[in-house]
Amino acid sequence: RLRELGPTPSEVGCNAAMHACSEGQQWLFALGLMGVMPENRLAANAVTLNTAARACSDGEQWRLTVAVLASMAASTLQADHISCKAGLGACGRGSVWPSAQLMLRTAARHVRCGTAEYNAALSAVGQWEAALTQ
Image (cartoon, rainbow, N blue to C red; front, side, top):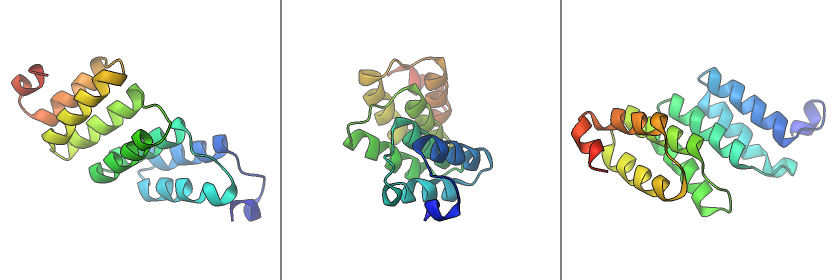
């Protein structure tokens, strides 16, 4: 369907369009773009999933953010600090500390977490003491 609209679509173009959707708080459109990639013979990559996770996180859709990141974990794609920050931020905005705690523990095994990730975890807590025990 994307091919009918103009130039041949690419992963880079879809990722850029998804990023624009994220910036415009249009998480549903970002997920829609990701959803039509396979029918256009485009493969989602880590940037695609990170962008979708960020769009959902920014749209306060923590369950969808976690689902996108879980699909990354189930694939051969490697999560990174961007994935971690999006997931922790979404859990923080959704006030779901158990999910943030699990995500932080899992991420710490695979990703070098930095200040931004720990700040996102702290925002999920509401109590700084609980985050320090991790």
